[in-house]
Length: 167
Picture 1 (tube, one colour):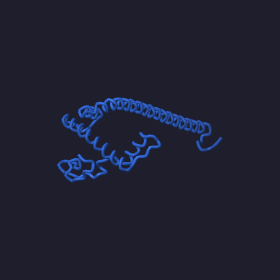
Picture 2: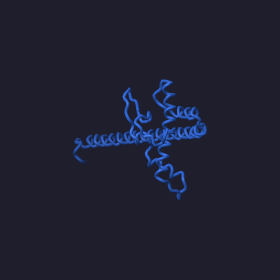
Picture 3: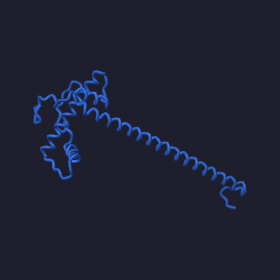
Picture 4: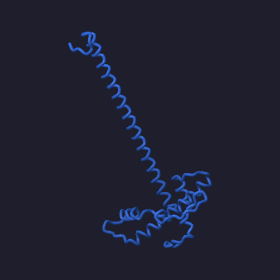
């Protein structure tokens, strides 16, 4: 497929939602060029410059690559009667498409990512538990202060006979 193929006959430009065909706009098919440019810049030395053509070419290439792998993963999900593509589907698709080297690196990344997510989830749970404990302590203190105030009012009333009259 040519990188400059803008034909309406291109099946990659079509999206089928419940038997309705919609033409995908270029910006819907490709990653945003600013994101691609930022990734390129972060990878290259500080003094390197990247031409507009290089950014556009990379934008098309990475977008096509992602579509290619995602399509394979989607086929796998369809055959398994699932609707959600997960990380394992992507890894298996990379292997099936001959990108084993990428798959091995991404497998390590996915494991580290999931580990970090588990740590974040645990931290969030702990923070929620601490907040709940603080809230309960504040409620208990508030009740205790209210009971003390009421107790003092009862004592004042018992001593003076009038709760509003000072001694």
